[in-house]
Image (cartoon, rainbow over all chains, first blue to last red; front, side):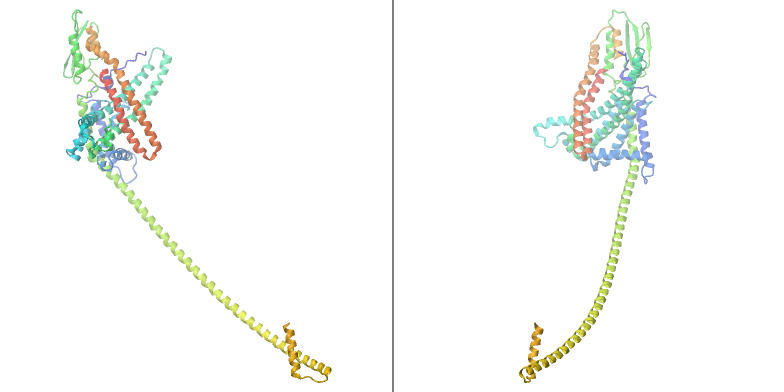
Length: 262
Length: 231
Length: 91
């Protein structure tokens, strides 16, 4: 009706390379690493004897959030040595998500599949490695057959468990993060384009030019929503990693059943 | 009628657009390039807007700004940069930032905990001090009460002693008075007896003309008087 | 898509590839829409039950919330796979 000309998906996801083999996604990833390191290094260098404030307070809140809500809820006390890894995952993913709403960037680095895929494969290697380290060769037995499976069902259960653990886990981790951020990005683009088109419409001017405020409000609301989504996705990635590693440490337990529910 | 042939050399794409007679079916070339575009998304691009305008015949080459593979396919350079950034970040966090931060947090928490314990100890000491003070106060109070009791007892004893002496004096005086009284009454009684005996004996003498035995008279008077006194 | 159809239009005939592309383009929307139904119901049910549990036992709210997020993550994955399929076949 409006003749809204929606750009092709690559047009809203790809940018001109900054230089050969380095593009905006790489830039955001590097910036995320630099900013994350800077925050925590600065926080570590502040006086630790007084009550924390400013950057140290921020860093300590994040650390305690990871310890309380991610590690303690899934792995318990013996998982505390995984805190640095989960903390890095959380902070890195969050800092890669947040540029989606920062002006001039306007692109979450995780809306491209490269970074989620790499992180998922890393988590995959880590949890299988942890399982092998903690349970030796028995890990694969635990992985394939939960305790109490009748012998007759073993081939079927083994096949399902193999797929769900070895293939579906990393894939779903990747797709969850990537697709959430991509969907958010597309939503933002849609409403931004719609507002622009309505503000600049040449036909039905009084109606369209004023009505353009509605998609603009929606855009503002969605921008706020994306902050939440960026945080939530980083949190979910971290907590699922914790659950997977916890399963590898303990073998099959309640958490294992929960983690393999899909 | 336009005919487009897309060829790829490295990252650059060349599009040859040429007019062909409409009789020849030109679908072969384009469909192969399309199938490449669809299936082998790693290396091909959608040729966006490169079809030459009508009449522009010949050889046009255009470097594309934004085209890329299907977004499902990861790009190697992004994977490499992302991986490098994350690994460096994770190592920094693991070996530099986190241990220092955590050490500071633990130190402060243990400091706070020891402060708490110290405060608890101080409070306990203060409580024992208070208890001691209260004990002292209690003993002082007990002392005072004992003193008071003692003084009261002494006073009591003195008072009872005085009362006793006073009572003794009074009793003595009363006894003396009683004795005096008794002796006076006895004297009066003996006088009355003597008088009554005399009167009786004289009356009897008058009546019978003969003086009665003095002993009998006195005995009878005695009996009558004591009977009267007893009545 | 657009470029491909340009090329194909330039060719002037309707090839099987083009037909396939048209079918894909028209069914991409359905792929996501259908994939979103189940997870939508599932997430609604899940969150509703979690709120019920939290209201009944506020002291267990932290644990319930963590489990709820895990459940949402697993349920949502199905919808997201639909979204990815949408991108895959819609292009």
